[in-house]
Length: 449
Ligand code: NAD
Image (cartoon, rainbow, N blue to C red):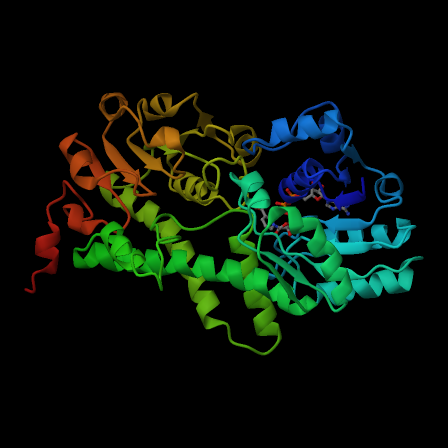
């Protein structure tokens, strides 16, 4: 069994480590977070990711997967060191490289056998060259660097690892990239080998493109609201064109999470600092912010102000099937509602422990129905499956007033209106107008005076 190390045991590192172990490799996951490693060693899992607990347990049991805080133990005699540390947003929009720098120095200090360092973290273009420089200057053994950007999605991370659309490997040392490619051979995925900087850029460009699709449809949604069209039908009509495709054309309260916001921001930052004027990327970020604010505007107009109103929030995680709260739309929406004097009740199937650490003055509830009880309005922020099959009559009966802002267009405007809700979707004017039970119909909005 060949030895692999993974530095950084978070969403990417733990999934990568467990999946490589499952392919028959001996993997040691290293992290500086002692509590996290202690929990993993006791059989606990620090994150919510479907299927991960069983995968980790199985590979620990066979002795292929282990955890440590000690670099000297973790990368001793390893052949491949995968770097999966966090690269969070810095104060000026740049990628904060504090953790990546510390990891590079620790690897250089402790690597004793010739190995390949594989950057999985999303790192600014040029980082691979920088890491290679650190290893060459400080390391005692030879260690080429390969960029291997990660494309897994939280919520389906294991399947994404096991059946990737593509594996991208960037290296200025092609034999090193080919050795990493062999590790992925069992997955039978297309493998693209490029130079280091191109691979780094593929990751940023991919995330920026997906974020652009989301902001594009959100801009179309706000035009739909004013012009009497239904963005869901517009997206369906667009997505049937194979040049466009249906993915990432769901209008809503915008993108969040640990990747899109910081990566679009970091790419714009890099572009500006290299003399470009990244106006499309800036517009993407601007529209995303407006998408969140639109929830406040809808609630204000529906309730005639937010002071002393009770708002129920359905879903806190940045998307379904994860407990990740990083850059979740819920955080900004709750903060803005509280600023305007609203009281918040909230529920999420997985993210409440993490949300409790981030949010204050929120009444956390045990399910959607308790959240609805006494609320003047409900906002569906995260489209968990359990929010798609609510007993809406019961929800309606529990609310103080039946205003429903559907931030993910889960429900049909006409059906919600028939149930007696004052329903606001995102860009769904044609379903009876943005304000379904309001005075102005979509028809009237569109009719020239
Ligand atoms: P995370 O915060 O969940 O995990 C990072 C881990 O690295 C933490 O456990 C932290 O304690 C550890 N760490 C920090 N400094 C360290 C050091 N010097 N030595 C050892 N461990 C250290 O982050 P994540 O979500 O797994 O993301 C990791 C990278 O992968 C980021 O660059 C991110 O942009 C990228 N990425 C993330 C996703 C995703 O869905 N989360 C998808 C694709 C790419």
